[in-house]
Length: 109
Image 1 (spheres, rainbow, N blue to C red):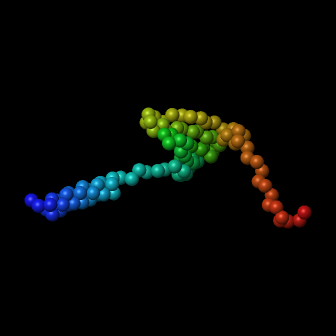
Image 2 (cartoon, one colour):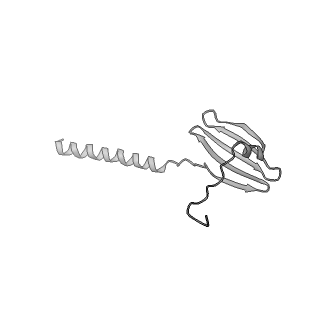
Image 3 (cartoon, one colour):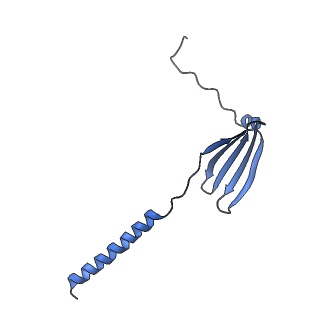
């Protein structure tokens, strides 16, 4: 075996390993991200959100009774936990937004 045959063998083996790695990377299933998704069914609205890398939240709103329930999914432990809930008005009272600013230079002075 001369050096030319050895080089061809090494390059062929390297190309095969790289090709198999490429196939493995592109055929594995992609993770499903559902952050910010929502749906409605009857009197219920369901929304998802992500707080930290290892926590996701599920917000369930009952529009008939104006109630909100918040559930937390902890990816580290795999547990779904009830986080908070109650009358929807209570959550809006806690975080009142400032009134919108009036545009400058428009309308009559």
